[in-house]
Image 1 (cartoon, rainbow, N blue to C red):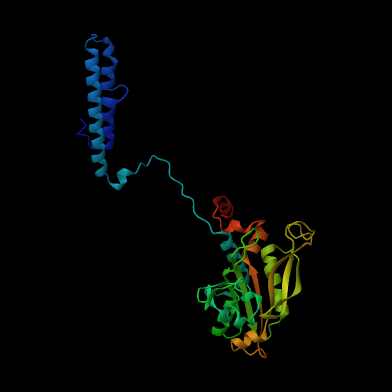
Image 2 (tube, rainbow, N blue to C red; image 1 turned 90 degrees about the vertical axis):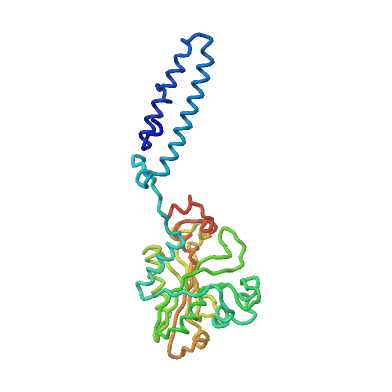
Length: 323
């Protein structure tokens, strides 16, 4: 019967016939106490030997049948399905996509540049002079021969795009940047920025403020306040930092905003004439504005995240909250 079984179902029937709880071997063992005392050990021993032989034959037959199964035979359609979870976008990617979508509505297009840069693009063309603290080895990741470095800002892309595309232009450049900062709750040696650039004949600071006001309204909500403070950046003049009213306390003052009611989110300004000269754009004819913001900081503010390290730890408990 075992050798004649043509499928797993038939073999299971044979197995139950011989080895089941009510099978032939079980029936023999159950009746051993009724046998003469001198026959019991012999019959018990023989029953166990036969049981092992039958089990071995069935096991070999199961292997033989499995080798000849078609893919359809191997699938047990009665089993419940394995529900596989779809992956989701990382919160940093989600934040970048949301920011890009907002600025695309007002005419910005996305451009990208290399993460390994030269001194020219990272410093010289951006009007950052020799001896500036940003050029120090403690502030920039220089590669072995010092001819190349890991870019410390996405502002490098504005030089490349202005070399390739003549005004008018509006470009947005998201990407990773690198600085040798000590890793803590608010700093990382690798993080993400978005650089924005707009150049035209009549572009002015009012256009910059209007563009950023539109972004703040769409990203943080229409009730979010905004203000500019004078600042200094080598590649813009005039320059400013932009604050928004604290989204935690609505500007009333809390521990997140240091009781000030305001949070700094980006730097901006009008493109410096020296930068235009580097890319052969006449600063007497064209004007432009630029801004740069840190993606991790923006995401931390919007989602109430208090530790930048969570973005890189790959903790599924954290990441699945953004699915």
